[in-house]
Length: 420
Image 1 (spheres, rainbow, N blue to C red):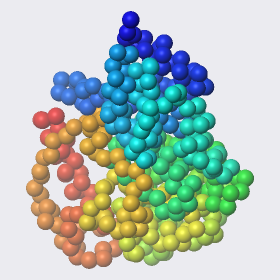
Image 2 (image 1 turned 60 degrees about the horizontal axis):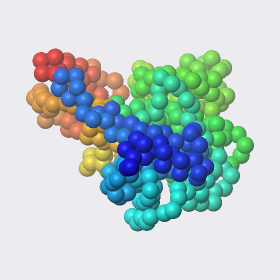
Image 3 (image 1 turned 180 degrees about the vertical axis):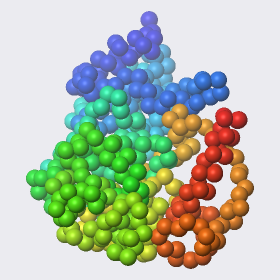
């Protein structure tokens, strides 16, 4: 009598996993990792899932694709490889309960094996010999928040940064589409670093982390995301420094600031309405921070005149992590030249296909500024302009046009109500 797939899993595969020392806490069955693309009529496409996800010490190690006993053990291999690549998992097992085929994505090679490896065996095969600080950082869990469980790509992004830190990389870039939770990723990464007590000198102490934004509203939004560890957090602002008797803030582990004000000189400072700091970063020792996270780093400009470049050069001792929603293009090539290629990309297309983002229609809006903006002295201007004409590709990067943004937003909202 041939067993069904469900019986094959429960009576054969589960038993073999148990014999290989896999505990229930290390096994996730029917691991759904997408929500399914959003369709018309409030419907969704099928969600993607792996039959088994095997994890150990907070790391996803392998997936198993199971087939019923009467099928070939290799029938699930192709799908398993596809899912493993998406999930950044190095090993795939395809089994019909009687036979087990192991495929190693790192070398693109597989073979039949007699039994599943144990969790510790598989972990060692993947990571090898680790120094104590590397092991501690690699195995540190994120903060469990039931209402904010990490999506699969957020977990991968964090793991990719951890991997880069372990390998001694000093400039790191993550590219994830708008709306995919980059600040959530940053929070969970910082939490792991704090709990693992990672720092540049491998001392037994929490790191000092600087989170840089280009707007006060984004800084305050990030502070809200970090609320579970608010006792470790401080804003670098004129108000906080005034409260501190005019001295810079040092009694925290995660600091939040806006890079325009941190990098501005006294004359420029007079034109900044949001903050009143005056080159506060120069008052910190150059080796004060272990990690600097630059949110929306493409907007600050990585070229030598970029508004956060001076801050990063001053704190060159720190590992620097850029977060961006913009894939590599001609107009932001300097960002990728500064940080290097992204250690992980999660595109708008992937977000839509996975069902985490809503499909959209492009609506072209022609305005008097479609060809660019020419400076008019009658316009209300804050700050100083470097030139008299700006191309549309420079909007929001080199120049801010609030009235233009409001107009475009209203047009898009109206289009959404008509066609959405």
